[in-house]
Amino acid sequence: MKYWRKPLDIEYLKIPRGRIHILKERCKGCSFCVEYCPCDVLEISEEFNAKGYHPPCVKDEEACVNCGLCEMLCPEFAIYLDEEEEVPVP
Amino acid sequence: MSSKQTVNPKLETQNSKPDRHPMDELLREDRLPHIWCSGCGIGVALTCFIKALQKCGLDLDKVVVVSGIGCTGRVAGYVNLDSFHTTHGRAIPFATGLKLANPELKVVVFSGDGDLIAIGGNHLIHAARRNVNMTVICVNNFNYGMTGGQVGPTTPPGAITSTSPYGCFEHPFNLPYLAAASGAVYVARWTTLHVRRLEKSILEALHKRGFSFVEIISPCPTLYGRWNKQRTGLAQMQYYHDQGVIRHGLDPKEADIGLHGEIIEGVFVHIEKPTFLDFCSDALAKSVG
Ligand SMILES: Cc1ncc(C[n+]2csc(CCOP(=O)(O)OP(=O)(O)O)c2C)c(N)n1
Ligand code: SF4
Ligand code: SF4
Ligand code: SF4
Ligand SMILES: [Mg+2]
Image 1 (spheres, rainbow over the protein chains, first blue to last red):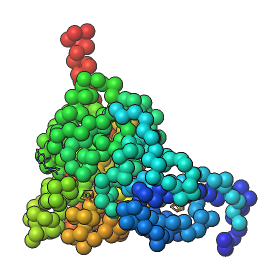
Image 2 (cartoon, rainbow over the protein chains, first blue to last red):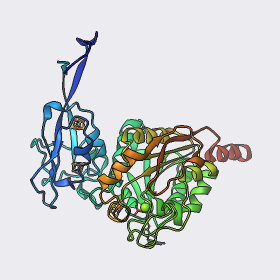
Image 3 (cartoon, each protein chain N blue to C red):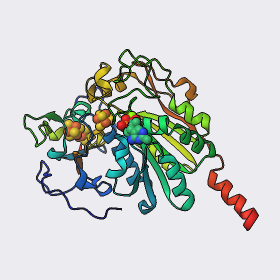
Image 4 (tube, each protein chain N blue to C red):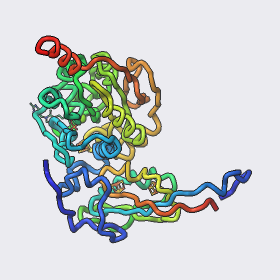
């Protein structure tokens, strides 16, 4: 990360991390999760599920900050997060 | 009413961890995937409701969900709580009966704009007028989704629907204004894009004494968006992103929704006044002791 001035509390700050779970067979490919993830973690996969939709897949799990927005926006209860240990700010 | 259900073995997680979605405890998992179309917003509205229930601290054995008929009305069949799928338009009178018969219950009506505002419109205004203790969550997708996308009392002027091929010729109801004028003590409107604020409003509504009303503007790409230049659920969400304007405390009279115009969101009414049950118990205490 680039800073114009190093934050004074940088040693105390932690970045939350999440592990993403995708219930592929529930997904209907609306892409809300992909579109509104603030960290661009997800993408639509090439794969088909049994209903013929393309579920999302994880492009960059390291970038996930466990904000939970994908879980809230998914109309299908098809994606959720597990909390991982927070990491210090690089 | 349904008890514990088993996890569908076909539903595997990407990380092949045999666990469950954290909301599944409040859903009838065996009925998922639900019937709603790809990009439909009702699932998002339900997500926010479930999240609010998980945070509300109420005894969930005493929370009852009542729905009428419509795509939104299916909610009663997906929640793993005591729930009732009533006849078209009659969710509110049914819920009133439940509350009066058993005042310990937290009664939530979850239904569509057609169900609550068209055929059930009179029940809505009178329950609000009496300040009956209940929370009403109205998913407004501007049409009658379940029956083929007909024009309804919330359809914006000019909108194309299956029964308004030249555009809707009518003035729609402004639901926050209607609820507020009728006497509701809590009135809010959010779109399905503004999930955090929506969840918070549902939580406030659940804790409110009296008649609380939350309108949720929601995509129906299959029967509404498709005819109105928003072909997908995502396009409708993008419209909410571009045109959603938060104005807490605004006079809801100002919160009309036009065809492609601004959607005013926020909490418009948050007041206290005696509820129907307060009056009932006061009157009964005086006359029968
Ligand atoms: C007495 C009666 N009249 C008409 C119908 C047909 N009907 C079923 S659902 C519905 C409208 C539902 O619209 P809304 O409440 O907006 O739900 P949505 O499907 O849009 O979520 C109608 C008119 C019915 N089931 N019963
Ligand atoms: S939790 Fe937030 S950052 Fe992580 S994938 Fe979901 S939306 Fe993206
Ligand atoms: S939001 Fe849910 S249904 Fe839509 S693409 Fe993502 S996982 Fe699939
Ligand atoms: S018809 Fe409309 S409201 Fe009904 S499930 Fe499909 S998108 Fe949702
Ligand atoms: Mg409707």
